Image (cartoon, rainbow, N blue to C red):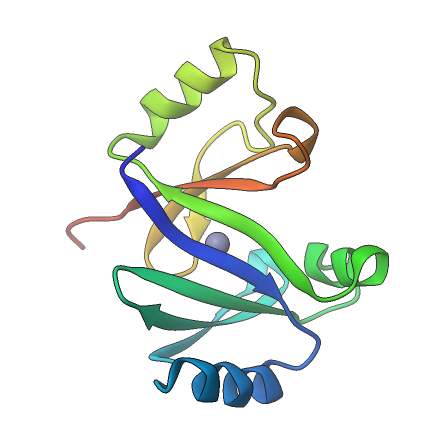
Length: 135
Ligand code: ZN
C-alpha cells in the first residue's frame, strides 16, 4: 500500500461539518460530490499529503445512516491508496481478509474502490483505492 489516501468521517449534517472542519483545518473543502450508488454526499479537505472525506447519508438505507444510528458520528473508514487494486484484492483475499466487494467499484474523487469487512480487520473498515487515470 502506498499511503493513507484519506480518512472517512461520518457526519449528520454535511454543511455544518464543512464549516467546522474548515475552521479546524483553516482551509475550506475543495469539492462536494454525491455518490448515488452508496447513498452518500461527500466533501473533501486536503490536509498536507492526505485528505479527509466527510460523509453524510443521502437516504435512510445508506450505510452511513446505519453507521450513525449504531455508533454515532465519527471515524468511518481509513482509505489506503494502492497501485493495482485488482492485485491487492487478490493478495488480501488469499491472505484471509474478507472483501465486501468482489469487483472494484467507482467511488468518490475519481477512484476505484473496494472495502474490507471490519470483522477481518480489528473493527476498522478499510478502503482500498486506486486513482482512475485517463478519461
Ligand atoms: Zn473513502
